[in-house]
Image (cartoon, rainbow, N blue to C red; front, side, top):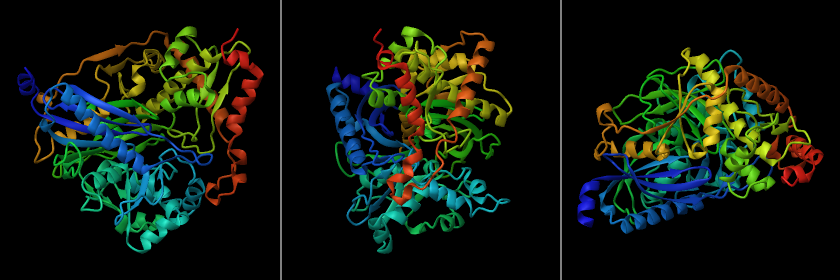
Length: 553
């Protein structure tokens, strides 16, 4: 019986999905794209100061090993032979920056996470050095100068962490985004680990020329980054090296994509004009623009979508990035305590079915696309004595949808052809109220695959299709049909527009809170202006009264 089952399953591909809040390892059937088993481990985020977000690179690496081992154990219990796993792909949170010692394998500082704001004064100082008529940073990278991207995080580490400075001086330092740190460690680390990244992750550093597909000397000189610490840039689908330890020792790592590019591949958006929106810690809308770089006039990023093979062409995408999506649910749980688990948000929202005029702008890390406004901070407004925690929960879900509407509008203006529907994925898509709200606020259908793990699937597809592996065909006729769930708009267009225009008023109120930007100095007084957004929330909470927030009548 077990032997027959193994024969039916055929060849398998694994995927590491290393996100901001958790790490997972998933195993797929390469012929049917069926998810066979997975394991997940939550990752801690550290907030040493206001606006700072860090993670422990060793904890991240250990979580990957744990997820691989546990998934293999689960496969064994299902009588699935793990020797059928022929390749591993890596998908990762982008921009998050790690510097480590190549002789000891030890990180020289915590990973500085993409959400981190400590580099705002660095950004302001660098911006003054860009000629007004020649923004060579944006023209070469497709990115605005922002705290979001790796180059300024790396610059901060070089300026402020003596261990990093010393390692660079002694030629011991290696830099990488999370994919580089994982691949180097998994392929041997100090014993011959492969120091590489792929084009999608490189394109998020602000050091990579997206036209020539190389590290750019002018950009490295501008940011003061020594090029010798940078990883080798490879395609998103080729054999980088072999696993050197654990249950899958000897299996090639042959796929690597930043998480949003992986989701684009997993949603099979291979044609010019196809788009997807991923709802995770943040929210990311990507539209495939084919072989051409399209530069946005409405606050979107131009980025590398994928390059599925050394000799394959590069594809580009327009991207709208929202910093806070699922993270707002975690904030309601961890900071306000109005829910005990993330899943409760849907139940609370369902109780009232409306925000009752309450609007929530979760600009905890400033505003990303389309505003790129670092001075913004979170506000909850439109409160009355009737407002309770259910209305705030509903407003939090609406906030995710309104932010998506803003970036979709920008995308439609840049592309000239409005999207007729929106393909979605990510952990938050299991929330049916959120999906229906999204359809109502966009006023177009929202389409969700029945198998929501599209990020991991994209990494697995890239790994399985790599030259020398060849167990996953990416030819259109061979791609498995995907069952979809569809959410149609259920309100009229006029109501949708009224709600959206009121949201825009709230966004304007969130701007301009932070007036002093110099987090690098280490002086606690620099944060005197930072809590203003939170002060607004807490002041209004006091006005409402604790009994209303807790839902006690």
